[in-house]
Amino acid sequence: MDFKNITVAGGGVLGSQIAFQVAFAGFNVSVYDISDAALKMTENRFKSYMEIYKEEVGATQEQVDAAFNRLSYHTSLAEAVKNADLVVEAVPEAVEIKEKFYTELAKVAPAHTIFATNSSTLPPSMFAHFTGRPEKFTTLHFCTEVWKHNIAEVMKHPGTNHDVWLQVLDFAKAMGMVPIAIEKEQPGYVLNTLLVPLLLQGLRLYENEVATFESIDKTWMISTRAPFGPFAFMDMIGLNTIFTVTSMLGQQGDEQLARVAEKIKTEFLDTGKLGKQAGEGFYTYPKPSFQESSFLK
Image 1 (cartoon, rainbow, N blue to C red):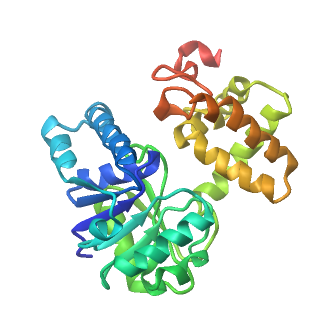
Image 2 (cartoon, helix red, strand yellow):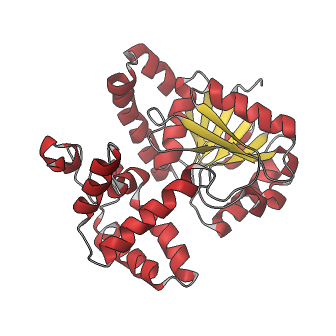
Image 3 (cartoon, rainbow, N blue to C red):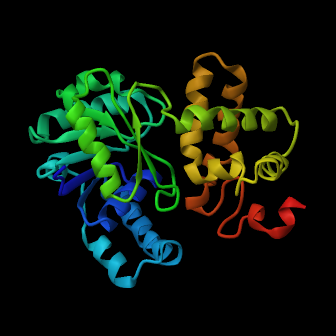
Protein backbone atom coordinates (compact mmCIF):
# COMPACT_ATOMS: atom_id res chain seq x y z
CA MET A 1 0.00 0.00 0.00
CA ASP A 2 1.53 3.26 -1.16
CA PHE A 3 -1.33 5.73 -0.79
CA LYS A 4 -0.40 9.37 -0.24
CA ASN A 5 -3.28 11.42 -1.63
CA ILE A 6 -6.84 10.66 -0.59
CA THR A 7 -10.04 12.26 -1.83
CA VAL A 8 -13.17 12.20 0.31
CA ALA A 9 -16.31 12.96 -1.69
CA GLY A 10 -19.01 14.39 0.56
CA GLY A 11 -18.27 16.56 3.57
CA GLY A 12 -21.32 15.75 5.69
CA VAL A 13 -21.22 14.41 9.23
CA LEU A 14 -19.42 11.14 8.51
CA GLY A 15 -17.56 12.30 5.40
CA SER A 16 -15.98 15.14 7.34
CA GLN A 17 -15.01 12.78 10.17
CA ILE A 18 -13.37 10.40 7.71
CA ALA A 19 -11.49 13.24 6.03
CA PHE A 20 -10.16 14.68 9.28
CA GLN A 21 -9.09 11.28 10.61
CA VAL A 22 -7.23 10.54 7.35
CA ALA A 23 -5.49 13.92 7.52
CA PHE A 24 -4.68 13.37 11.20
CA ALA A 25 -3.00 10.09 10.20
CA GLY A 26 -0.67 12.03 7.89
CA PHE A 27 -2.27 11.75 4.45
CA ASN A 28 -3.03 14.62 2.08
CA VAL A 29 -6.80 14.92 1.79
CA SER A 30 -8.87 16.62 -0.90
CA VAL A 31 -12.47 17.17 0.13
CA TYR A 32 -15.09 17.39 -2.61
CA ASP A 33 -18.61 18.72 -2.26
CA ILE A 34 -21.17 20.32 -4.52
CA SER A 35 -20.93 23.95 -3.36
CA ASP A 36 -18.76 26.46 -1.54
CA ALA A 37 -21.45 26.72 1.13
CA ALA A 38 -21.31 22.96 1.77
CA LEU A 39 -17.52 23.09 1.97
CA LYS A 40 -17.66 25.98 4.43
CA MET A 41 -19.85 23.85 6.70
CA THR A 42 -17.32 21.05 6.35
CA GLU A 43 -14.46 23.37 7.27
CA ASN A 44 -16.37 24.42 10.38
CA ARG A 45 -16.80 20.76 11.29
CA PHE A 46 -13.04 20.29 10.96
CA LYS A 47 -12.46 23.15 13.38
CA SER A 48 -14.77 21.49 15.90
CA TYR A 49 -12.92 18.18 15.45
CA MET A 50 -9.65 19.91 16.30
CA GLU A 51 -10.99 20.61 19.78
CA ILE A 52 -12.52 17.12 20.09
CA TYR A 53 -9.24 15.44 19.15
CA LYS A 54 -7.40 17.46 21.78
CA GLU A 55 -9.98 16.54 24.43
CA GLU A 56 -10.79 12.93 23.52
CA VAL A 57 -7.73 11.67 21.63
CA GLY A 58 -5.08 13.60 23.56
CA ALA A 59 -3.77 15.29 20.42
CA THR A 60 -1.54 18.33 20.67
CA GLN A 61 -2.31 21.67 19.06
CA GLU A 62 0.55 21.04 16.63
CA GLN A 63 -0.97 17.71 15.57
CA VAL A 64 -4.44 19.07 14.89
CA ASP A 65 -3.01 22.13 13.12
CA ALA A 66 -0.99 19.82 10.88
CA ALA A 67 -4.08 17.74 10.13
CA PHE A 68 -6.11 20.84 9.29
CA ASN A 69 -3.38 22.05 6.95
CA ARG A 70 -3.38 18.75 5.03
CA LEU A 71 -7.01 19.36 3.97
CA SER A 72 -7.97 21.08 0.73
CA TYR A 73 -11.44 21.94 -0.60
CA HIS A 74 -12.89 21.51 -4.10
CA THR A 75 -16.18 21.95 -5.91
CA SER A 76 -14.60 20.56 -9.10
CA LEU A 77 -14.55 16.78 -9.01
CA ALA A 78 -11.78 16.64 -11.62
CA GLU A 79 -9.59 18.92 -9.52
CA ALA A 80 -10.36 17.02 -6.34
CA VAL A 81 -9.27 13.64 -7.73
CA LYS A 82 -6.46 14.58 -10.12
CA ASN A 83 -3.77 13.15 -7.78
CA ALA A 84 -5.92 10.68 -5.85
CA ASP A 85 -4.64 7.23 -4.96
CA LEU A 86 -7.97 6.47 -3.28
CA VAL A 87 -11.40 8.11 -3.46
CA VAL A 88 -13.71 7.49 -0.50
CA GLU A 89 -17.30 8.22 -1.49
CA ALA A 90 -19.57 9.53 1.27
CA VAL A 91 -22.33 11.17 -0.77
CA PRO A 92 -26.00 10.89 0.27
CA GLU A 93 -27.47 7.41 0.62
CA ALA A 94 -29.58 7.52 -2.55
CA VAL A 95 -29.13 5.21 -5.53
CA GLU A 96 -29.54 7.87 -8.21
CA ILE A 97 -27.08 10.25 -6.53
CA LYS A 98 -24.42 7.54 -6.24
CA GLU A 99 -24.95 6.35 -9.80
CA LYS A 100 -24.50 9.88 -11.11
CA PHE A 101 -21.46 10.45 -8.92
CA TYR A 102 -19.65 7.31 -10.08
CA THR A 103 -20.49 7.97 -13.71
CA GLU A 104 -18.85 11.39 -13.41
CA LEU A 105 -15.96 10.10 -11.30
CA ALA A 106 -15.10 7.41 -13.86
CA LYS A 107 -14.53 10.11 -16.47
CA VAL A 108 -12.06 12.22 -14.48
CA ALA A 109 -10.16 9.96 -12.05
CA PRO A 110 -6.64 8.76 -12.92
CA ALA A 111 -6.38 5.17 -14.12
CA HIS A 112 -4.59 3.99 -10.97
CA THR A 113 -7.14 5.42 -8.53
CA ILE A 114 -9.04 2.98 -6.32
CA PHE A 115 -12.67 3.79 -5.43
CA ALA A 116 -14.32 2.92 -2.11
CA THR A 117 -17.88 3.55 -1.04
CA ASN A 118 -18.90 4.31 2.52
CA SER A 119 -22.52 3.38 1.75
CA SER A 120 -24.13 1.99 4.88
CA THR A 121 -26.96 -0.02 3.31
CA LEU A 122 -26.38 -0.26 -0.46
CA PRO A 123 -24.08 -3.09 -1.62
CA PRO A 124 -21.16 -2.10 -3.88
CA SER A 125 -22.24 -4.43 -6.70
CA MET A 126 -25.13 -1.99 -7.30
CA PHE A 127 -22.63 0.63 -8.47
CA ALA A 128 -19.66 -1.38 -9.76
CA HIS A 129 -20.69 -0.98 -13.40
CA PHE A 130 -20.89 2.81 -13.08
CA THR A 131 -17.32 3.07 -11.76
CA GLY A 132 -15.75 1.98 -15.03
CA ARG A 133 -13.23 -0.01 -12.95
CA PRO A 134 -15.17 -2.63 -10.96
CA GLU A 135 -11.96 -4.50 -10.14
CA LYS A 136 -10.70 -1.37 -8.29
CA PHE A 137 -13.93 -0.79 -6.39
CA THR A 138 -14.65 -1.89 -2.83
CA THR A 139 -16.21 -0.57 0.36
CA LEU A 140 -14.67 1.27 3.27
CA HIS A 141 -17.33 1.72 5.91
CA PHE A 142 -16.97 3.59 9.19
CA CYS A 143 -18.90 4.09 12.40
CA THR A 144 -19.75 7.66 13.37
CA GLU A 145 -17.28 9.40 15.71
CA VAL A 146 -14.47 7.57 13.96
CA TRP A 147 -11.81 8.78 16.40
CA LYS A 148 -13.56 6.83 19.15
CA HIS A 149 -15.45 4.02 17.40
CA ASN A 150 -12.51 3.19 15.18
CA ILE A 151 -13.53 0.28 13.02
CA ALA A 152 -13.37 0.24 9.23
CA GLU A 153 -15.26 -2.49 7.41
CA VAL A 154 -13.66 -3.36 4.07
CA MET A 155 -15.96 -5.46 1.91
CA LYS A 156 -15.46 -6.95 -1.53
CA HIS A 157 -18.02 -7.26 -4.25
CA PRO A 158 -17.72 -10.26 -6.61
CA GLY A 159 -15.56 -8.32 -9.07
CA THR A 160 -13.12 -6.71 -6.63
CA ASN A 161 -9.47 -7.56 -7.23
CA HIS A 162 -8.10 -9.34 -4.16
CA ASP A 163 -4.94 -7.22 -4.03
CA VAL A 164 -7.02 -4.03 -4.17
CA TRP A 165 -9.06 -5.29 -1.21
CA LEU A 166 -5.86 -5.99 0.73
CA GLN A 167 -4.51 -2.52 -0.08
CA VAL A 168 -7.64 -0.88 1.31
CA LEU A 169 -7.43 -3.04 4.44
CA ASP A 170 -3.83 -1.85 4.90
CA PHE A 171 -4.91 1.75 4.39
CA ALA A 172 -7.65 1.39 7.01
CA LYS A 173 -5.03 0.32 9.54
CA ALA A 174 -2.66 3.11 8.47
CA MET A 175 -5.34 5.73 9.12
CA GLY A 176 -5.81 4.50 12.68
CA MET A 177 -8.73 2.12 12.28
CA VAL A 178 -9.17 -1.51 13.23
CA PRO A 179 -9.80 -3.10 9.81
CA ILE A 180 -12.68 -5.57 9.61
CA ALA A 181 -12.20 -7.86 6.61
CA ILE A 182 -15.52 -8.81 5.01
CA GLU A 183 -14.94 -11.39 2.31
CA LYS A 184 -18.51 -11.79 1.07
CA GLU A 185 -20.86 -9.01 0.04
CA GLN A 186 -23.43 -8.36 2.76
CA PRO A 187 -25.75 -5.33 2.71
CA GLY A 188 -25.18 -3.58 6.02
CA TYR A 189 -21.77 -5.22 6.53
CA VAL A 190 -21.35 -6.55 10.10
CA LEU A 191 -22.07 -3.33 11.97
CA ASN A 192 -25.35 -2.30 10.38
CA THR A 193 -26.60 -5.88 10.04
CA LEU A 194 -26.54 -5.86 13.83
CA LEU A 195 -27.35 -2.19 14.46
CA VAL A 196 -30.14 -1.27 12.02
CA PRO A 197 -32.70 -3.74 13.44
CA LEU A 198 -32.06 -2.30 16.91
CA LEU A 199 -32.64 1.26 15.70
CA LEU A 200 -35.74 0.36 13.71
CA GLN A 201 -37.26 -1.58 16.59
CA GLY A 202 -36.63 1.42 18.83
CA LEU A 203 -38.41 3.65 16.33
CA ARG A 204 -41.35 1.22 16.13
CA LEU A 205 -41.73 1.25 19.92
CA TYR A 206 -41.58 5.06 19.85
CA GLU A 207 -44.07 5.43 16.99
CA ASN A 208 -46.47 3.01 18.68
CA GLU A 209 -46.24 5.10 21.86
CA VAL A 210 -45.20 2.03 23.82
CA ALA A 211 -42.58 4.09 25.67
CA THR A 212 -40.77 7.42 25.38
CA PHE A 213 -37.45 7.50 23.58
CA GLU A 214 -35.75 8.18 26.91
CA SER A 215 -37.31 5.07 28.45
CA ILE A 216 -36.27 2.98 25.45
CA ASP A 217 -32.68 4.20 25.71
CA LYS A 218 -32.69 3.73 29.47
CA THR A 219 -33.86 0.14 29.09
CA TRP A 220 -31.09 -0.65 26.63
CA MET A 221 -28.37 1.10 28.65
CA ILE A 222 -29.22 -0.56 31.95
CA SER A 223 -29.73 -4.00 30.44
CA THR A 224 -26.56 -4.09 28.33
CA ARG A 225 -24.32 -1.57 30.12
CA ALA A 226 -24.02 0.29 26.81
CA PRO A 227 -22.98 3.97 27.09
CA PHE A 228 -26.02 5.08 25.09
CA GLY A 229 -29.22 3.73 23.60
CA PRO A 230 -30.67 3.60 20.07
CA PHE A 231 -32.01 7.18 20.04
CA ALA A 232 -28.72 8.66 21.24
CA PHE A 233 -27.03 6.57 18.54
CA MET A 234 -29.38 7.97 15.92
CA ASP A 235 -28.46 11.49 17.03
CA MET A 236 -24.81 10.59 16.48
CA ILE A 237 -25.50 9.16 13.02
CA GLY A 238 -27.58 12.19 12.02
CA LEU A 239 -31.34 12.24 11.56
CA ASN A 240 -31.03 12.97 7.84
CA THR A 241 -29.61 9.48 7.44
CA ILE A 242 -32.31 7.97 9.65
CA PHE A 243 -34.94 9.72 7.53
CA THR A 244 -33.38 8.38 4.32
CA VAL A 245 -33.39 4.79 5.59
CA THR A 246 -36.92 4.85 7.04
CA SER A 247 -38.27 6.66 3.98
CA MET A 248 -36.73 4.05 1.66
CA LEU A 249 -38.22 1.20 3.70
CA GLY A 250 -41.54 3.03 3.79
CA GLN A 251 -41.54 3.28 0.00
CA GLN A 252 -40.94 -0.47 -0.12
CA GLY A 253 -44.23 -1.04 1.69
CA ASP A 254 -43.53 -0.73 5.40
CA GLU A 255 -46.39 1.57 6.42
CA GLN A 256 -45.20 2.05 9.98
CA LEU A 257 -41.73 3.16 8.91
CA ALA A 258 -43.32 5.48 6.36
CA ARG A 259 -45.09 7.14 9.30
CA VAL A 260 -41.80 7.22 11.22
CA ALA A 261 -40.09 8.93 8.26
CA GLU A 262 -42.81 11.58 8.11
CA LYS A 263 -42.54 12.15 11.86
CA ILE A 264 -38.77 12.58 11.64
CA LYS A 265 -39.17 15.01 8.75
CA THR A 266 -41.81 17.24 10.31
CA GLU A 267 -40.73 17.14 13.95
CA PHE A 268 -36.96 17.08 13.51
CA LEU A 269 -35.57 17.87 10.06
CA ASP A 270 -37.98 20.70 9.31
CA THR A 271 -37.18 22.31 12.66
CA GLY A 272 -33.41 22.02 12.35
CA LYS A 273 -33.08 19.19 14.88
CA LEU A 274 -30.65 17.15 12.81
CA GLY A 275 -28.84 15.37 15.61
CA LYS A 276 -25.74 15.79 17.72
CA GLN A 277 -23.80 17.83 15.15
CA ALA A 278 -26.62 20.38 15.01
CA GLY A 279 -26.86 20.64 18.80
CA GLU A 280 -30.26 18.97 19.01
CA GLY A 281 -32.02 15.84 17.86
CA PHE A 282 -33.85 13.58 20.22
CA TYR A 283 -31.54 15.00 22.89
CA THR A 284 -30.01 18.45 23.37
CA TYR A 285 -26.22 18.82 23.21
CA PRO A 286 -23.50 19.25 24.42
CA LYS A 287 -24.99 17.95 27.69
CA PRO A 288 -27.65 15.37 26.76
CA SER A 289 -29.78 13.98 29.55
CA PHE A 290 -28.65 10.39 28.96
CA GLN A 291 -25.18 11.37 30.23
CA GLU A 292 -26.53 12.64 33.54
CA SER A 293 -26.00 10.36 36.54
CA SER A 294 -29.71 10.47 37.35
CA PHE A 295 -30.75 9.16 33.90
CA LEU A 296 -30.26 5.51 34.83
CA LYS A 297 -32.02 5.78 38.17
